[in-house]
Amino acid sequence: MYIEQEKKRGRFLAWILLLLIIVAALAVYAIVERPELVGQEPPAATVETAEGHVDRGDALFDDGKIDEAMAEYQRATELDSDHAIAYARWGRLLTLRRRYSDGLEKTTRAVALAPENAEAHALHAMALDWNGQYDEAVASALRAIELDSEYAEGYAYLAEAYADKDRWNEALESAKTAVRLDGSSWVTHLNLGYVYEKMGNYSQAVAEYAEAGLLEPNLSYLYIRLARTYRILGKYELAIAQLELAENLDPRNPEVYDTLGQVYLDQGEFERAADRFRKAAEEDPEYAAAYGHLGIAYFRLMRWEDAIPNFLSAIEYGTQAPEYYYALGWSYINLAEDCEQAVPYFETALQLDVWAQPAWDGLDYCEQ
Image 1 (tube, helix red, strand yellow):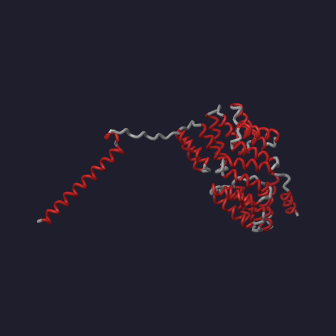
Image 2: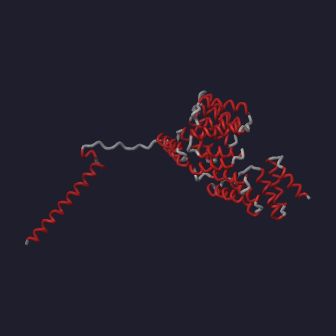
């Protein structure tokens, strides 16, 4: 009988415990899901805004996360199709990623939406310049300055466009004005460095690129620029060190591997160069320069059968570099004495650069 009483008491306690659990669960639900039932104010709803995505895009860009930043700018334009700055900054990053026509499309949209916005015109100038439209880039940068005479980046992009037109005095004056107006901007130091590089003043270019890197330490492109200048100076170890930094920041950026391959190519390490060019092409299967450089590496290795398809890929993806055309012609000759295939490429090389001597030599060879 005692045992039976204990069993009944145990079942009663179990029911009490279950009831307490149910009551507690209901209380938690009320507090979280229905706070008004327990006298609490409901939490404010989170509102997704275009401006919020632009701010997140800016923060991600500062962290060197270019692809993630582009996604935020894109989302901003989906929420507000008239957000000019979102389009302009998205266009800048597309341009940095070598998607020149896409970048230009976005900055064109930006200036159409905000024709009185200096930043939109300045970034449009950058996209135009990188797309090879130098005169239009100058005009857009001048418009940015007209709208805001103190806007440093307007002068910086004007300097870049002037440099690409070989207008050295105007380029240097504009770049120095940009730095004077805002010495804390990585863009102003970057483009002053670019002007110095184009003028052949590589030591000054290095100093400005290094300063830009200090101001924006997470942007891999700045380290690539610095590495390219070290490569020109023959300082290969320093170039490689900069590219290692760039790779750590942006391991999916094919320019890192393409530039490293060029360093190895300069040093005569053709197999290592080919490996890096293949990596660049893997990261971006439409990156014309990577295929062209890979073709050169195979050409140096006398692997004509491997050089040919890579030169053809570089041409397919839009390269206008004459050396790829005449090297392709010579590859056909070296592989099979195939002048019928080679001659059209020699002729195209000369259309691109009438002083391309290897192309003239190829035509002379095939006329014998």
